[in-house]
Image (cartoon, rainbow over all chains, first blue to last red):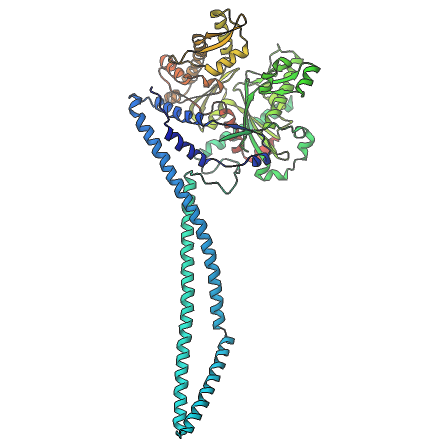
Length: 265
Length: 375
């Protein structure tokens, strides 16, 4: 069988892929775990293992065509897989960055929303309304006294003065109401916009997290946030659950019998 | 991409007093339990642990010969590779033979004091293996130890005795069964575990293997070493070599492939390093283990349900240190074609750790209440 050869570029891609998938730690971290010696696997050996595994698989399959025919195809397929993995890893890295930015934006917007809501509520409170009513009353009083003084000096009839004052008051009320409504609309609009932006960010954050989970499930090198733990016992979703349960029970029974026999002797 | 290991002097954990001090309450939390699968082989001991530690070392224990060597070595006992390196200064014990502790069976040829010495060495070997697991001092250690398929009750008792000082709860399990369990091959399969002392064969059919499902052959790596030594003495009487040199050459060059490169070693001839071609002798010695294996395979297949014999013949797993002979799986398949009418053999992944990995899986799958009852 013509031996498969690992080209330089393939080896380089493989190296980066493995490095990306490896758990990173420091010498200090190892020391803290009480580890003083570490066994190191040479990358050349990894290459050899991969090439041999492909060769052995082909041999076991008993493929009877010339191995040199598929050598290029295997190499191309392998390189494609590594490239695909590289692209996926790049996407994951970008998603992680985006996730970080989205989380920051969401936090800032939430703060802004709280502030705007508070201002809006304060603007609706009776004490402010009371203040503005007093200002309006004072303004009306000033306008009334000026109108009366002007029209009295001009010899205008009192009914005309009253009518004028009523019209002025009505116009002022209208204007104030319009201004108030506009202000309230503006604030409400502002609040609505902030809320929509936050909802959008939440959705994007959720999507990014979902994509990260899928990437993790496909074995792309993302550091697990939770440590490894052992959950003892055969899992119920194990397809051989019943067989294993019986076998383990039998092992246990044999060991119990062994101890009983030894105790008798 | 690193496996780690540490030799830690943890003498306290080996005493009964410290065992009693381990809190039973903490056994409820998974982090306070370390599960271990152990393959106590004649030539090599391997452990696989739930905390990620995996270690393999020669099953050798050495004690300084005298005060001078004790002072030079600075310790009372050495293990594994250190024993090989310093063997000239040590009384060396290889406490396991044919996969069981020497003198623990019904063999009357072993003197009582020798049996006791082997038992002590075996205890220390197990202690060393558990120390290598690097379990926290306050954690419980639950361990499954693989034993040869035909180990007697006395053999199993000896293993329990060797383990009880350092392991909180021990389960003894058939070694080839452990290999099969680790590979998740629970039915219609034959497992061959080629060790140094023995070759174990085990038939898997979905239930616990019975005595008739298991065969232990005396042919293993040690027989191969003896055969190679014999052949070389015949073909190269002028060459000086030791058993360790034979073992080293075997581990580096063992093969049954006809197309492999020449096997050349540099060994002394009349004190002068000389290149020697040992290709033919190596291949002949390696090939010599195949016929008895295939004969045993044939018996196990023939006594199986005829409806499933074909499946069984074509689902043979090859494990153990001896399975690392290059081309062995294919050679056994070819020999089966010739003598049994067909067969397919595949080598397990990680032959050195296959038994330990399987034992670890058993230990983790075992219900916690069983461990409690056996402690």
